[in-house]
Structures are given as C-alpha cells and as structure tokens.
Amino acid sequence: MSLKYSTTTADYLVWSDAMNLIRKLAKDGNYKISLLIALGCFTGLRISDILALTWEQILNTEEFTITEKKTGKKRVLRLNPQLQQHIQECHEHIQPLKDTSYILVSQKGTVFTIQRINVILKEIKKKYRLKVKNFSCHSLRKTFGRQVYNMNSENSELALVKLMELFNHSSVAITKRYLGLRQEEILQTYDCLTF
Image 1 (cartoon, rainbow, N blue to C red):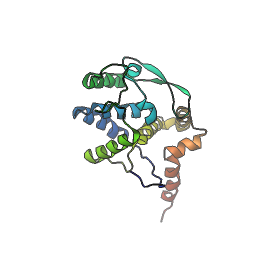
Image 2: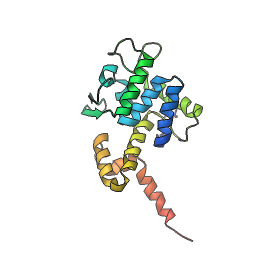
Image 3: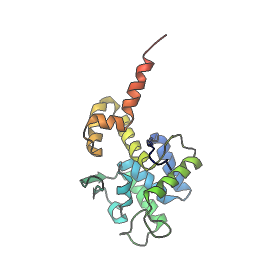
Image 4: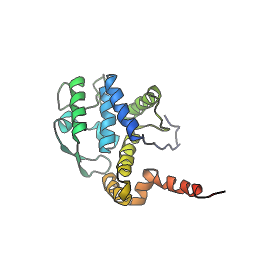
C-alpha cells in the first residue's frame, strides 16, 4: 500500500508478460485472478467496472454494454474469440452458483474490494517475478492502452485518438501522459545529444 498523501503511478506490463501471466495463473488454478487480468488487459475497463461484471454479461457473447461507474457513460465492449474462450474455461473451473453472480467473488461470498485486488496483485508480482515497478489494478488498463498504441505504431496519432475516445480523455495530450509516452518523448531528447 502507498503512504497516505503520496502519489504512486501504475505501470503497464509488457503485453507478452501479461499474456504469460494470464496463462500461468490459469495453469496454477487461480482462475479468478487470471480472468481479472485478462479482462483488464483486453477491455481496458477500470477495476470498478470489472468488479461490477456478472457472468451473464460476459459469458457466451461477443459484445456487451456497461455504464461506466466513474463517468456514467454507456460503453459497448467487444470480446475477441480468445478472450471468450478464456472466460468459458474460467467459468467451468470457478463454477459460480448462478450466472447472475458477480465474476470476482471472494470465498466469503462478497465481491473483492479494490484494495484487496491491489494486495493480491502485489503478491502476484513477487511470486511470478514480474518486471514492472508499480503493479496495481490500474496497470491492467494501462497495459491495454500501451498494446493498442504499440500495435498501431505506423499510425500512432490515430491510435491515440482511438484510445482518447475509449478512455474518455478530453485530449490526446492527456492520453499520451496517461500512457507514459510524454515522459518517454522528453527523455529521448537526451538521447539525441552526442559527445
């Protein structure tokens, strides 16, 4: 946990590391957290919206609609076939009491809190030796953003505009700062100098 009144920034996972983590967690029988990380990385949803998802929303569907908790805006999300398959496999192993149940329910029968998820993610970082400095719930959303940006590097401005819309940012500059691109650009200035 961070100190009171301090600021911490979540860092993104390299996409291949995130996909390996999803597979390792499932292989180790930790289907709930595997599903959490998969949903975060493939949808870019905030943790508050992931925790509000029910099985019936995401099971056996290509698209679903949510109302974002933070913004109150409706958002349509598409699940690619690989994510749909992973959701199905997690559902089979988790075996929820009913499909109207929330997807991330603790052993006590309550939905995980954001604080608890962050503790779990820090434990996972250590256990799986993840190469990420600050790993938290928000890292999943940033991993999604970075992957979208990296996959569209030939047209990075269009990728930034798409991400700005998806993240409901008011400008591309905010999206660049959010993804850590602005800082990288500034630091690259130093690399231009030669001796």
